[in-house]
Image 1: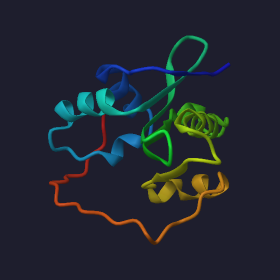
Image 2: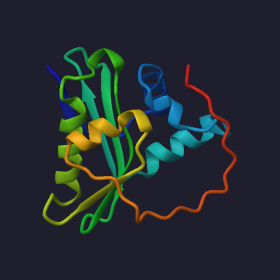
Image 3: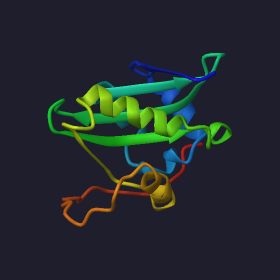
Image 4: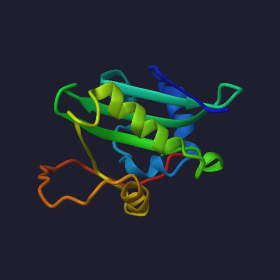
Length: 143
């Protein structure tokens, strides 16, 4: 049985989780170790999905104004727990926390491999999102 709770994750637990998911490839190598604690301490929505032994098997992190929008920064599921509805449950819970489907729009930047998942959730690709990105970005995988 998988339980979902709103909780702050420790950097060590989150990095361990990233090793067991494809989510770890979304971060740049630059200052990774110092930036993860900032991420975990700053998000307004922090959800953890845990198995019966307490192992972290799913995560959703997001930013919201609790009135109009929710930006999902991280959504991942342990490779051994994929296709069990955990990602869908995390999205539904985050949407409810942020203010609900009738009031809050959800935005995210999707990994190309995750697009089919988000389309199944009823999300649509958008052409109206702007970005300003001049950061150093060396791709790597959390190991």
